[in-house]
Length: 91
Image 1: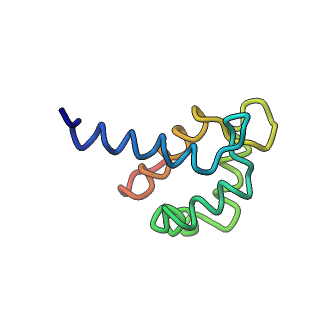
Image 2: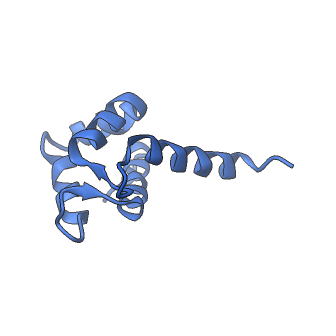
C-alpha cells in the first residue's frame, strides 16, 4: 500500500535530510545552504526578499544548542518558516 501525497512528501524530506547529514545526523551550515540552493530555489528567493542576512539570522535563532549544525527538528522547523514565506505569510 502506498502512502498519501503528504506522507510521500514527508518521506522525501527525511531522505533529503539524510542525504546531506553527517554521521551525527546533523547538517553543517554550508551543506544546508547547498541543500537549499539545489532543492529549494523558491524558498531562497522568498528569503532574499526579506534581506540578505534573513536566512542566516533564522538559522542562528533556531540553532538551539548553538553548534552551527542543523538537526532534523531544526531542519523541519526552518522549512516550515520557508513554507510560510513562500505562501505569502508573515513571520
